[in-house]
Length: 303
Image (spheres, one colour):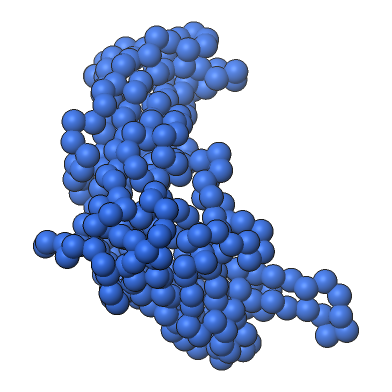
């Protein structure tokens, strides 16, 4: 794992790196077959993109630059029932690689077909790749701003609090949020309430995170604080909000981040994150085991 991302939870889940043209890295994967059947798996990289706030793999083995720079060894292998196997994913960035961030997925694929022929079923489990290419391995920092905090009611009268988030940096983000309400009528307060979903936010894109509340919650006023996080990045917007009888109340303005990296407490597992996919032929798990750098043309990093 690169020093710059040593404490970043995203780097424990995915392949996340900043590389210079000409650099090469490796990542080891562990594949677990938790089924009662032997399985044959194929391991490969394919293109991915961020679409409407989701990280989406392309159809089949569609390639892009990042996937074409990525190889798996072995590319296929048999795994016995309740067995495990390892594979190595190698990424070699060409000297003439375009600068910027690219996305791909390393897939572990199982195919099955009826004995007498018929439709072939394809099942996959994968690891995302977020790789940013820049000179000297400094491809650009991650930043985002939380622009506004807004109280409103939806068409069913449910109170909702939203935060408008904008990616102002040079890396894609996986943003999540929590809302706290304090100082309400009679001194009421709430526990931290998570936003409805995690959004993958591409460079320059904006999104709205929403927290839906119980219809019994008092109108207010409340001291609202919406905190948004992506990895080690954290930004908040605070203000006094009151839920309107209908529609949307006036938004509370936020502020752009004063620093690109603001730490918040995280719990980091000591082993890689397991990703599971239920397969018709069994259960396959994919684990990121670690990585070592092979060679690089970049200036060595400090720390």
